[in-house]
Amino acid sequence: MYSFVNSSLGWFHLAASVVAMAAGAYILFATKGTKNHKKIGYIYVFSMVLICGSALGIYNLTGRFGMFHILAFLGFGTLIAGMLPLLVKGIRKDFRVFHLWFMYYSVLGLYAAFASELSVRIPDKPFYTMVGIATGSIFVLGSFFIFWKEKVWSRYLLK
Image 1 (tube, helix red, strand yellow):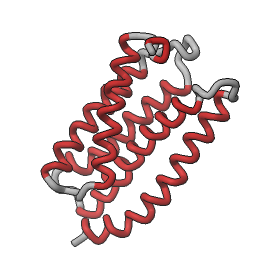
Image 2 (spheres, helix red, strand yellow; image 1 turned 30 degrees about the vertical axis):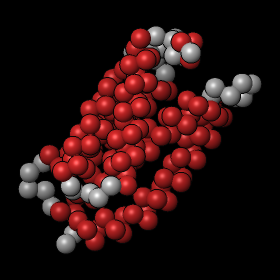
Image 3 (tube, helix red, strand yellow; image 1 turned 90 degrees about the horizontal axis):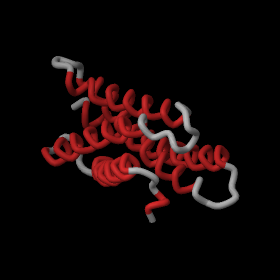
Image 4 (cartoon, helix red, strand yellow; image 1 turned 120 degrees about the horizontal axis):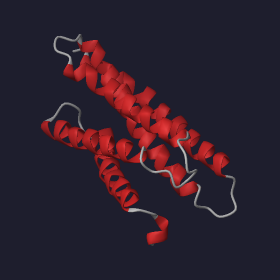
């Protein structure tokens, strides 16, 4: 199995990913605003920082800076955008919906990366086509879920 992951940094990246995927799944479906939500949410954010940071040091796919490094910066961006509405004091209640939007898209990005990673390991399949199909599928399905949940969020957050 060591050939599945090629370095110590790769194993670290994988371990942080497993933690983030478990925390992200909990966050997606748990009641928002509870102590557990906040605790698990910070575990998710910390593990995503580790994932995105470690991704910037992995070059065995192409040997140079590439698309996945850019996506790691996008991952950092969704985390920052998702956390700002909570960290800025005195923010309007309706801005908390942005927290939910960006954090849900952060989790979708994580799952899309996982699906892409799995799909490119199918032998004799075109790499970028498989990444596109995996990523697109996750984001289309996830976006339907987010749009459906936004009505619930708005009622909950704007009380």
